[in-house]
Length: 268
Figure 1 (tube, one colour):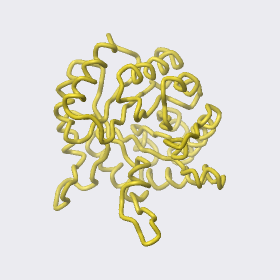
Figure 2 (spheres, helix red, strand yellow):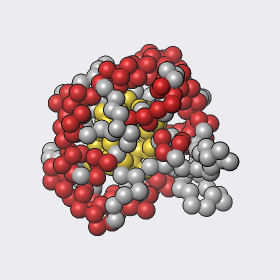
Figure 3 (cartoon, helix red, strand yellow):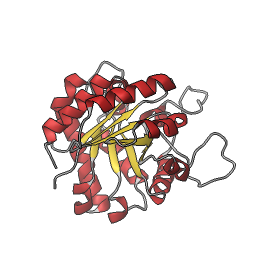
Figure 4 (spheres, helix red, strand yellow):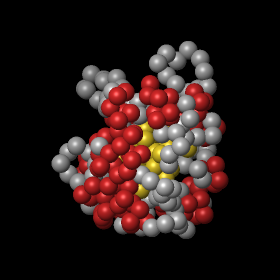
């Protein structure tokens, strides 16, 4: 099955409003016509409305970086999937490694208790119920990679994140593989390592959701994607695009990654 490539930029907590508008203007100038690829930017939540206006009538879509699983209530500081939909967004990143491992309370030993698979699963269901597309992030830490438990970790995260979403219920989900050990550590995943992980993810999706649904689910690579490694990564058969961090903050770099995906995957 031919899967339409998808490149999304996760801006994280970066850029002021003027810089965000300038970046989008530069991207719009670089991306012409109707490219045969899905493109999204995921700004911080307070910029969703202005960025929706900035990308209007362009091929660029909008995504949020997180949401809360309840529709409304006493959840100070949170935003619901329905609220995100009203901004014009189409995607929501869920279970990002920073929310699993970096953001959260520390215990006495300094261990950070971030988002759990059960919490991410509840958010995933809320996003789908709102008519949006979840970008479900999975990936192993450096310690887990060195302990040779990568596949076990990926299986656990997929089982937890997709619980209750078997078959067609999972058909609209995007998976992003984030090897945490390859983000800001100086260690890069080779194309062979990326393909190995993506192939395992697709096998597990086939087991959990059925082969037909698994074959159609797009799996992005999200481990420090840059212009100089994008081409080799995009050539992997089970890599269907990229979830881009730092490189998405520079229009030339982000566009180069988009072009690499287009060249590798062709027109669908």
